[in-house]
Image 1 (cartoon, rainbow, N blue to C red):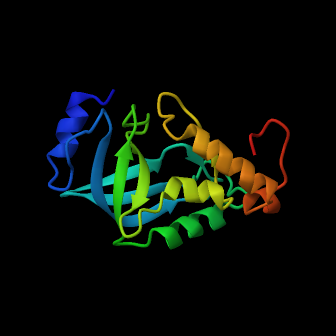
Image 2: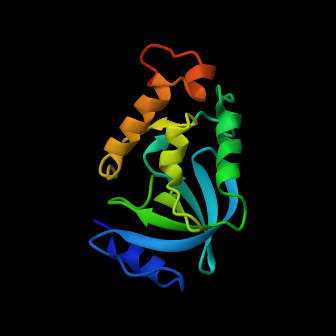
Length: 167
């Protein structure tokens, strides 16, 4: 369930519609890419850091961790898919924010409807990360990851898999 205060805050933005069937959607514009699974968008008058739900890319900018195998490539791929000023549709699932107060969203490119979260997994730039209650596309992400892994795409070819690592 989307908290009422969050709905009010997002719908106060001129581009944000009312929730439909418990799902909140809002139009935004890409400002910049933070890393392979995080972007900053302009949402109405506000700037929001958005974490793409359901995926995880290797670390590339966390100062507490070394750059991981394929981290830079994942960030570069997201930047190709979502250059600055790209219009996107954000789809919020059951839990709208994480512990870092980032907006959690599925990101769809407005120009062609491309589902960016899914594209990152399908092309081998991300693996799935299913954290309840935000699991709407869990099955699609798992199928895309399996296909990318079987085809040895992206990180599945470039990075050695360590037992128990999830990658």
